[in-house]
Image (cartoon, helix red, strand yellow):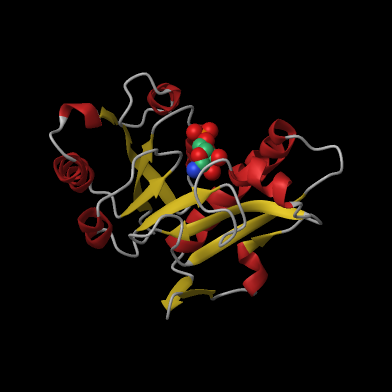
Length: 215
Ligand code: GRF
């Protein structure tokens, strides 16, 4: 069966990109990466993509007069690559509603909290300050509102008594690296349906979209 063609957008170290590259290195995995775009020329993730033999593009937002033109350039590059799905992996630019509309239901993101809690930045510090006992990460469809789209999969991470921001972030990141390939697999296998903003997983138990501490 043809593998789902995927483009990944990054801005930085690209450890989630690496998790996707590693998953796709298995010929039996139902998706393949066809393009990695970074808005930052020095992003380490670009090196990871090159090493894996995946095409890369640097599209520097600073060279565009406005956000719409930047997004158009990214859209053209993605369309040219033949990608059918776009994964945001530490991509630190807000996308225009026009770009989000073009890629509606074909654009996903990973966020380091259990959404809808802790949208935005500094999620681990905010989780510690709030005293939550369970934290984690979420893969979701992207909508025009930040970190607000339908939830595809979540990974839960218990908050420990002696946690600081770095320790908690490291444990969440390790779960992110398992969760993103899992979510991509569910999409590529055609197992998700989206109704009234709620994602349902078919062809298995609903728990397929949950990584919990007991796993
Ligand atoms: C991750 O924590 C991800 O959840 C967030 O940005 C970070 C990217 O890290 N969206 P990396 O570049 O994948 O290592």
